[in-house]
Image 1 (cartoon, rainbow, N blue to C red):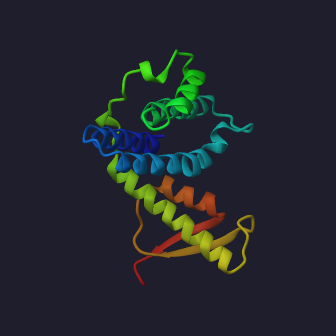
Image 2 (tube, rainbow, N blue to C red):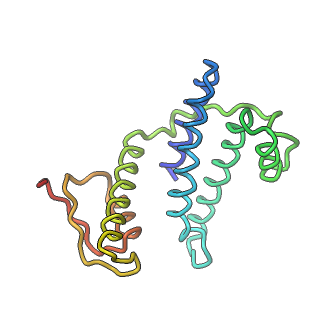
Length: 179
């Protein structure tokens, strides 16, 4: 949750700055990157938190609140570019009359975690490389692997390493400084 909220705040800041300077292209690129991070990474990593088997009600509610906040803020950021669909989504989410009558989102600097964003980016890169190696060797993800050794030093906290293990179906993750 902290990661996607940090991404959202960075996105809000960059889109606002870009639009204030009347440069729409950079704003759309930033929004596109956020949507990709939100939909293909955050939602995928959160599926066990909100799925049928989720037992931790507090964590489930936290995930739902985070998803809701991201979607509402995203509709506000999309409003200048996609006025009709953002208005429809916003009204369905909030029950309010129109996204175009809502205040523009303000970035909350206290939610920014640059190091976490960088470490999550590395986590995604490691997962993508492991998936590429599996594909090259024709090893499906459902087939567990005992261990993977990654060239480079460890990064992030153990919970990021746990994401790598879960996303790639590997039992042990090892880092080495050798090339």
